[in-house]
Image 1 (cartoon, rainbow, N blue to C red):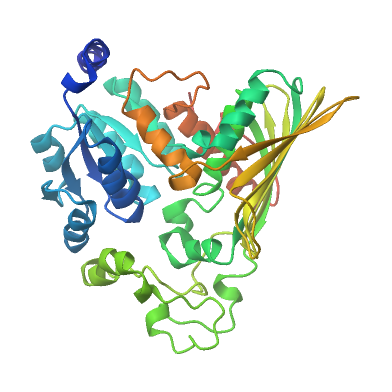
Image 2 (tube, rainbow, N blue to C red; image 1 turned 90 degrees about the horizontal axis):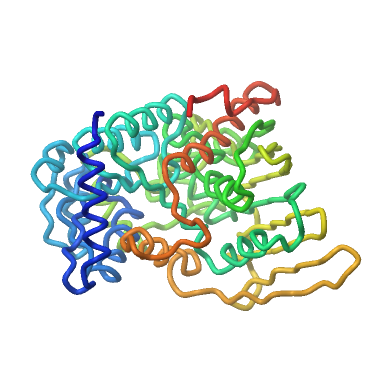
Amino acid sequence: MPGSSGSLSRRRFVAASLAMPLAAQPRVRVALAGTGHRGTSSWGRELLEELGHRVQMVGLFDTNRKRLEAARRLIGTEAPLYTDFDRMVRETHPDYVIVTTPDSTHHEYIIRAMELGRDVITEKPMTTDEVKCQAILDAEKKTGRRVIVTFNYRYSNTAQKIKELLMAGTIGPVTSIDFHWYLDVYHGADYFRRWHAYRAKSGTLFVHKATHHFDLINWYLEADPVEVTAFAALRKYGRNGSFRGTNCRACPHKDKCEFYWDMTRNKRLMELYAECESEDGYYRDACVFREDIDIFDTMVAQVRYSNGALMSYSLNAFMPYEGYHLAFNGMNGRIEVRVYERQPWEVPRQDEIRVTKNFGKSEVLVIPHAKGGHFGADPRLRAMIFDPAKPDPLKQRAGSRAGAMSLLTGVAAVKSADSGGQPVKIASLVRL
């Protein structure tokens, strides 16, 4: 069977690691593909600061040579730099390739890494459309290698508590879900400054951003999405602006633009992007009113799941505050949470989950925020990935199937919205 010897070697490596004292275990060799903000922070400096005793960075790859040099400084590594991906993998012999390139290119590096005999850790979304998704699934089966998808939202204190409540049957079988995500005029607008503003690169926010949200529901329910109906529009950004420029730093309209953003105040972003523009012409502070922007900023969807549950979902990208509202309606009660991530008023560093039983009492559970990125989720995710002995009672580890189910929900939503709201079945998109 193709790839079977690699799978066997990996199983032996994990088995040996479990039997070996922690201090004596060899460090896991990782190579990073894509040295942008997320790659150099969460999968670069933060990874090595937390797990440098267990992880060794052996190579950095990017198509932009200047960004590579900036990334090495920002990560604080002496790892060699490569603009040739195959050469990096062949010369550095990583245990894992971490993929943090733009979404539309994920499949290239995931598939090639597996063909070269390496396991892969990829940022979400796993890819951007059903054709690339099928190619990844097929390559994983053919090579016998493994894809890990980094769904960090599963690891926050609040998400973990909700999962525990649902697993315990606190409200009985879930019948429906209300899920509404609010991106504010800072974070939401930022997607329209970057490469994410083009569906060919991001799959739209139904894929790039909502893959987080769809994965949470799949994980909470332990069920698959079956059918999606959606509507969407571009109402605020892109061609809706009355004026536009190329990018904020050079814009003649900066004095009157409510979305003007001074990137020069962020030294890290200036090093990673502004000082590397001569290599590829990519503007990190591009105008949010570019006329060729073709993603949505206003989205609604309805999803039917394999266990019969129904979800009403929305995502809006120019709200006055950031966060989400989530509620599970069960046969025996309701679980509800309102999470604030940024807002123009003070809130405690905690979330409150209200659990209300039918014909019974209502209880509020106070969930404190943990330290670290995404309310402490990022450090927990990294610890789980690089500790094969760590228990996983909540089933937080995610592979290619979870990656497929979340991104395909978004792909189906885009197809439905483009068709004027016709329902799209997930089973029509890929062969699992």
